[in-house]
Length: 455
Ligand code: PFF
Image 1 (cartoon, rainbow, N blue to C red):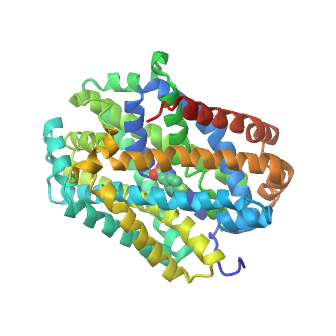
Image 2 (spheres, rainbow, N blue to C red):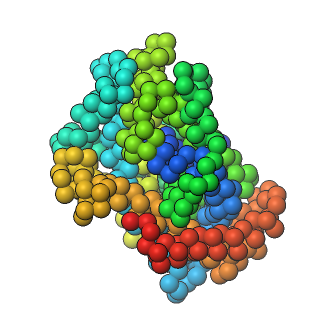
């Protein structure tokens, strides 16, 4: 359980980039737009933003406080703070969830690799209509061998970085790539918003139609807020555990939350205008972004080159997220089971790959996985909902109860402010963690269980 030799970020900027690297990923660019599109647009976005502020930010700070104080993985952290209790199972759920998310996330990340390849070979850059784009998408992901191989390549890349450890592997990669991604997204948003018919997309994103609100929409928005901020499974506990003692943690946490949310909105400002201008249905599902984006490249100067650069960065954004997913599981085996980091990275990564295969084959290759158990949605969608919505929500609920009522706000605050930098508005934070988050998340989960509306 010793924390010596676990590694550390080089400083606040290093942490912000790595944590933003975890938060910013396919969740922002792939999951946010299609989930917003499936759930009616503006009303979903409003609820999502409210959840980021009322639940996301307080939970970020809670996870970071636990990580900084214990300097341990999620299971070890709960064991240290509440020895001999069942709270360690909450950490265990987090580790399992990291594994579960990685097992489908790596499949989508594999798709981005195939788009990168498609951009390099000119297949993607030359697409102009939605039909062409759809055909490219289906050809790329509907196969059996190719999606599995792409997932395996992505998993191998993730394993290689996680093997290298905290500051060498993870931090170095994010330093240049995150700012570049931001600049490219801004350029694409400007182009998309000035497309013919683009204004309708902006309206769809920001004008809430409250008749679209339902418990499903609220659950999806909660799951999305947590997923996008990498919360509810201990990723921020783990990343906070490598935070240097002297630096301002409350500020770093809040910066990461705003950075992440800004990128999601920016992705929305690209996808929705583009979607309305090419006539794609907003509720097209998980393929949405992949089908819509190519239409923008065709309308940008040097679109082919732009497409290559964009998919390269998207791949990296996905990689900095898969790294954090694998890192949570690896940190558990390194801290608690004394495994060697290299061995842990390899074996856990390979095991996860095995669990990823059904998701990779669920996009048309195997009928039983495409319409899983007669639910009308794919096996991958179900994984996304179970791990990415339910499990994260249960994790966030448990975490708030733990920090608010078991460990206690004064201890958590002391850990957060250990460097002497204060958390502005800590009374509000305390109210949100103790009352608002548990009641809101608890009520949503109970309501969904009783009415069983979600599936
Ligand atoms: N936040 C990542 C994204 O938006 O792509 C996904 C993710 C990473 C979720 C790490 C959870 C996590 F712990």
